[in-house]
Image 1: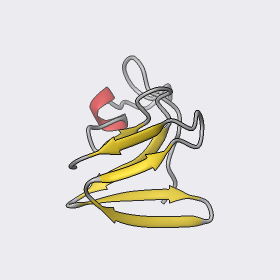
Image 2: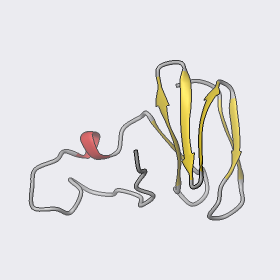
Image 3: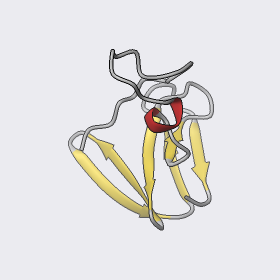
Length: 78
């Protein structure tokens, strides 16, 4: 599974097919509080984090440093 690190604004994903904003970027996405870079996706009771070459599943609470702006981020639950 690949993560798309772009921040979605407005309606849809910019493609010609129809997506609603909620389908493109959901509450399951964990994004950096500062720059908006995608850090992981909540899946059930765990956070799925993919940073090549690593793929991790972590329990909550989760702390991670943003690879974009180096800010420390915390997520308590999915």
